[in-house]
Image (cartoon, rainbow, N blue to C red):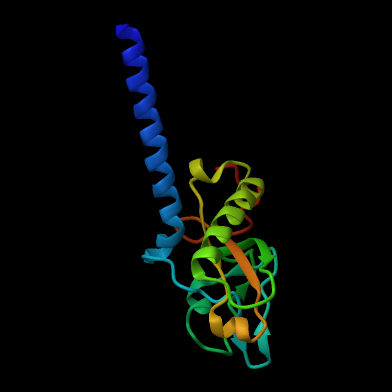
Length: 167
């Protein structure tokens, strides 16, 4: 009888840690680079010629991505130090702009699945992290439907691809 109580208590503790660990892991998606609650981060950057589409394998300089300058190209050579690498992307269904909550839920799940395939280890145990960029209402009105998943190393810039990093 004593053993079954100990086993039940241990199982409950493991389940609690796993549940809390999952919440912490998902929250890192929203807190990457010091961000708090999820906010719309445009999938596209606007250049003088219009929308600049991010593609799989693009490496990005975060400072250039977020500088607000429509003429700045955030894509850099992966052989140079960079902050982010686009490892997955998908289109949202056409129609009215979906709720941010539904975009965030879908993006978090789909990017996490792609992360595991790209890196070689599950997102929950990886030393790496990711963010995703999704359309704002204004970029949606301009035709933006893409969600881009971008991997990064929380310890700093990387050189080369993180594909099959196994960490």
